[in-house]
Amino acid sequence: MKVAVLGLGYVGLPLALAIRKKTNYEVVGYDIKPDKIEKILKGICPIDDIQAEEDCRNFSLKASFNDEIIEGSDIYFVCVPTPVLDDYTPDLRPLKGAIKTITKFLRRGQYIVIESTVNPGVCDELVIPMVQELTGLKITRDFHVVHCPERINPGDPKWNVYNIPRNVGGSSVEATKFIAEFYRKILDAEVYEMPDLKTTEATKIIENTFRDINIAFVNELAKSFEVLGIDILEVIKGASNKPFAFLPHYPGCGVGGHCIPVDPYYLIDRASKSGFDHKFLKLAREINNSMPAHTVNHLVDALNHFAKPIKGTRIALLGLSYKPNLGDLRESPALKIKSILEDKGADLICFDPYIKELSNAENLEQALDGAFAILLATAHKQFSALTGKKLSEFGTKIVIDGRNYLDKHDILKHGIYYKGIGR
Ligand SMILES: NC(=O)c1ccc[n+]([C@@H]2O[C@H](COP(=O)([O-])OP(=O)(O)OC[C@H]3O[C@@H](n4cnc5c(N)ncnc54)[C@H](O)[C@@H]3O)[C@@H](O)[C@H]2O)c1
Image (cartoon, rainbow, N blue to C red; front, side):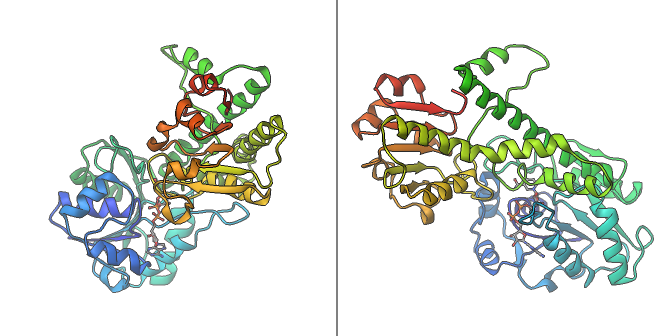
């Protein structure tokens, strides 16, 4: 058996390596980015993922930016991005590109497995018609389409491609079973067979909209508790000892990444085409999108307290990636904060230990040097060094803690202005 993985990013690369590790099938990877391929061929992992880094060191992968490498595959796994356009509608161009590539080589009896996150209906309404039109082959009689949404959480020390349970649903019961059996060879986790493509597509979207809505809820509470003078972290701590029906979520300066701030728009768009208006999901997006500006407002208020303008004042923006301890900038709220501060004319110093190319300080100390205020936008472990003592040594006057990561009481004790999100 030969299998091909199209798109060697956070989803595709760990999958390709896992198939290589757990089976003796021939595995090939295809990606349109030559620099990524070059790294993979040298055994250098191009993504921030502990498991993939280890697998990259131990297993070589055949990979190319020439699509002929996928020819003759029995299964084509599609792991390309599914972002949104500027108007927040789905950008299905990478998916269509990958499907077009597959159709050049697709033969009878072969399988296309979509791992990319898509809204309900994409496989039935786009993938299958496109393949039938371009190849003349017929679904089920000649080829099969299966959806197995990836749930990987890059940088997570516990959950990886091997141990996260998966849902599999295909264009026929037989196709579902065949691909589910394939995943069972690779995973040490449950592989659940779903009734069909559309239902499987919907599972991934509800997982991520669930998270977006809960974060929006707690962000709204944070704004409310700021007005009421209540520390939301203390409230969540108290509420969390209820042993059932409460699930803690935490407020922050915004939601980033390729999934949570993107996937809800896929459902919003598709449902609206069928006449349903997702008011709740839209509101959640609106609240979460408002958090970077809300965080900057805290800084403006703090500077006002010191009768200082934002323009020309040295501000250290700490953290640029959307997630702690990783250098992933996709949809990062820190970038929105950065651009608002730049527009307001702040004398801005950015520092992210994982993103040197956007940092204009070599280290934390250099970033703190001369900064009147700091705005922490990512809870990188390196920032736990920001104690009240250290900050007062550097003469920091204001701390805006966009991740509620620092010790509020310790910072206040040192006479420094502290404001978190909802506290
Ligand atoms: N990153 C995550 O944490 C995560 C988790 C679960 C699901 N997903 C979903 O998985 C999909 C892929 O996400 P990702 O994070 O791996 O993206 P990524 O950007 O890290 O990787 C995608 C890769 O696909 C390549 N590509 C683009 N168009 C291509 C084409 N036509 N042919 C071949 N390769 C092409 C890109 O060059 C890139 O290397 C998305 O739908 C995403 O929503 C991502």
